[in-house]
Length: 184
Image (cartoon, rainbow, N blue to C red; front, top):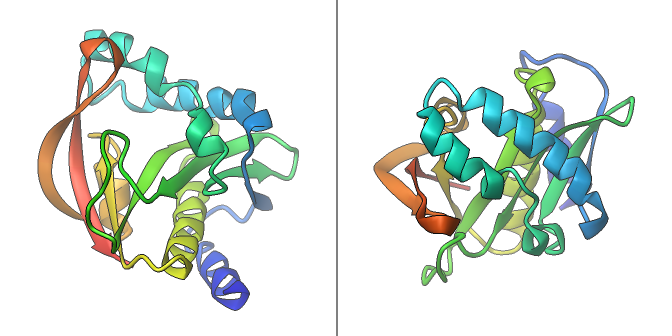
């Protein structure tokens, strides 16, 4: 597994800023660092695709670290050489809203790149770690609920669009998203 991870992470440099970055498993102690990425990332990068009133209702819950993900061992941080958190994301055997009955399918969860770090390979680095780890755990398919602005990123990774959905969130918010999948 280690050699596959090294190869996958080495591929991430194609067309990306070569600034030294480190990927590591997140813990509950990283909640503030994750919040510092999620809040600005979602607020700034989603603004062009979502109505302000939708974001105002969704961001309080979306822009916060998920303790279950942080304690799973399947959620990661990418840190710059300076220690600044550039991105976060992970995977789980189940989607956020239910148990998955398909034992082949894992789910991409809570990905974000800080606006200062977009287009530098952070998201790809996170995805490739998720793919290596999910495959090693026996999964052969990834599903994600991509934000409207995130769909091009996932398409570039080889995900295909299945359908437009509305993901349920706290306080009765129905958040527009795109359900996508790809084999791993």
